[in-house]
Length: 116
Image (cartoon, rainbow, N blue to C red; front, side):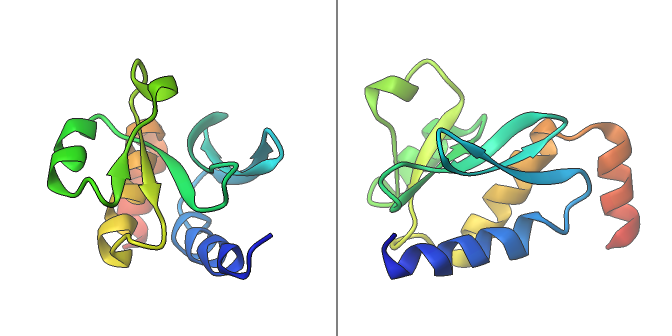
């Protein structure tokens, strides 16, 4: 694995694992993050991108196509690919939390709100 991947994984874990109900498992052999047994983000096989669940994909693609992109495989799914080396960490943190919110139950969201 490239050395940067450990930095990326550390960032993802610090942001995501404190969220209620989040578990880290593998998906096709790569780290992935789930809530309610539903995947909401994962490391792509190239170790340079993450696959991120979003209902606002077009917004992000237009906002910064150097960071956010899709391949043909993802055209029919609510996912965007994020180039980790170019991503703004604070913006990415917000997107990761939003992806979690879109999959979390009301109970988990309430737990998160009470912990803030």
